Image (cartoon, rainbow, N blue to C red):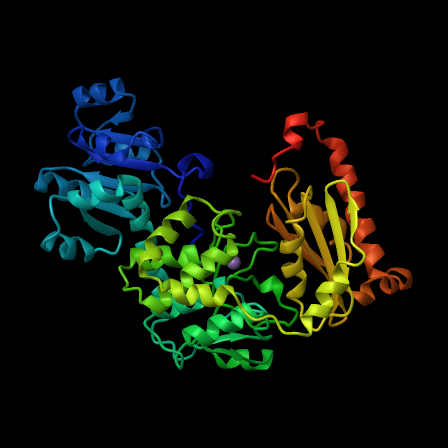
Length: 487
Ligand SMILES: [Mn+2]
């Protein structure tokens, strides 16, 4: 079974929400922002008229029959909430939905959770919520939680009776990946022996090493040949296409990077509009009502924080929600210690060299670093360069391990950084990313002799060509737009 990423807003994603009701109370539980996204279904034409008068979308028909569901073409991805007060009618309607549709997430509203929760939960497609939960969390959130709970069940079933599980991260794992792996291990109820966290590379960034040390997390370094010995391989915060090695089939992918090629696996949850993979995992933990320890909360909060630059970059409402849920559980003293890592002394040379020959063209700064011992210096400096006065774009390149690594950052106000790097560099290597942050990796031997000798000039020329072409397609910016962009 394949499960695609969950999205929250029906309007953006084509997801549909239905609430079956026998009075108008649920209308008030929904909240004004979401009322347009929901279709209410009822059996009473007077109730229908009343709801429509209030601005709701409402259809009338027999809720215990097949015809209405057929007419609406109810399908597996639709979210259904059942808000029927009469208990007998409620169970008959529930039966009808299960019989006539293949919806996999049904939220059943009950007065209070007593036996009803356990009773309803015996059916995997149904989750019961109480009126109190509905008031506290909102109808849409509860419908989404049911979807997550359903997915979580599928996800867990993949690991049933599988002895060796590997949680695999990118070559130089970052806090978002590490936290996601820790959360995944918790979701599966495993430990570091039955589900080790691994990389085919090495954790190098000092702040990430600090995270591992302070939270006592182990990331093992393994070779590609060892992958075969695991029964289940989970990729977190990374796609198969990231790897230079030929991977054996992976079983699960959970990530927020846009997919460049369609990977086949048992369970895939990719949400490119999310700021962090940690957010996706937090939603699973929440849906599974799994206890989040201080260590896990600290890791996840740090993961969201670093991937979204404290919720400023590429963050969506879900990231904010996850952040607020984790905040009271986390150890903030430890996070402060992780954020102020010690930079190795030898890096000072790289830094000082970087700023001796910056090239600035209009609002673009290009900085090149020659032979690096660490790849992560490149994005580190790119983040920093974006702080330079008047700069909207930072393009930082460096040579590491026979490759040119390029990091682009912008304030997300004009062209997509991912798209720009893709156009400029994909003929030579891998390139892509988000709207405000992107990366390219080009093997030196993919370049002709002249470019390979002068990667600084190569990167600058290629990027600026694309940048200038993009500018020509843009409408001229007005005077006041040129100021205060970075607020
Ligand atoms: Mn991430």
